Amino acid sequence: MNDGIVRAGESFGIGNEFTGVQVRKVWTRQGERLELYVPKHGYRILLDAMQLEIVAAQDPEKFSELFARKLGSEDA
Image (cartoon, rainbow, N blue to C red):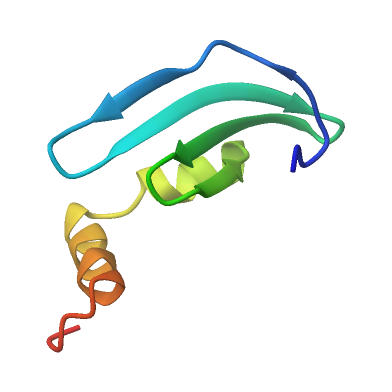
């Protein structure tokens, strides 16, 4: 699946002992996006500038809450 990607930049990785993510800038017919890809699970998302702004505006605690939900914590 290429989601209309017409050009892609070089990817780089970020990882730790638990997971790794590949990141690259891509160009689609609808504009520039940041692609995040998790090879271990096959997860992939394209985010535009407005979506990234929303992510950047979140408190770190919000991500902890999302992690707990994804991992099935009963406290979430």
